[in-house]
Image 1 (cartoon, rainbow, N blue to C red):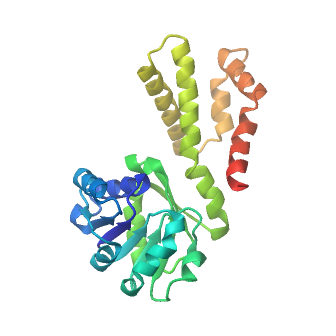
Image 2: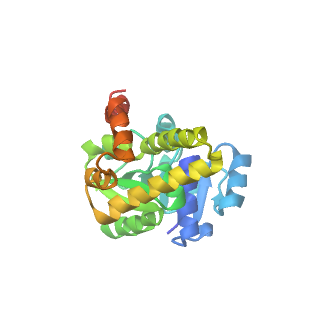
Image 3: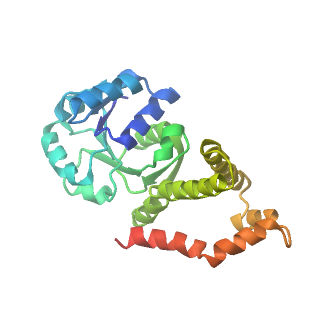
Length: 259
């Protein structure tokens, strides 16, 4: 299977690198097109994919096309390659586009799957949301899901939940980074060097998340296990509650969903 990316921004680079570094696909079978050819060629040398000079040349070289350009560019890109995509599979990682968005503008022979990835895919700890509604062949879809598991966990969602799923997993890394930065600042305030502060906070977040995932324990129960009666941790938790931490988290998602 040969795969081609139209667009090679941070997310596409993360996916391409994940595929190649995991050994799921050879770099010679991964193509990419981006309008800034010098930057594209530099990334090709770094990651190991094959740069393509035009979208048309890319589509003619691959079996599966991953749409990774800006959402507003998609219709123009598809018009440019319309004659060459018949019978091929298109995967989209563009925010806001779902199966029905593509089915309205593509002919029936083009197979479609929309995916919402996130940036931790770059280190194999991503969340890849596959829209349940799709037109891939079952065998083809299974092969692609297996490929994407090299980037993290793959979950399937109905179309109506892709938006909120993307808000949590797609926007979530930025929210988590704010938490890391804030607690890093707190550590620096009390004397820990900044690089070490970030390392301690990030590992604490990683470990806490891994413990919840592997144990399946309710996060409230995990929190309770750390909070001794009259202890220091419960005082910190009480301060977060007083500051409206939980409400702020929910409101951040409200802001994304109600744009």
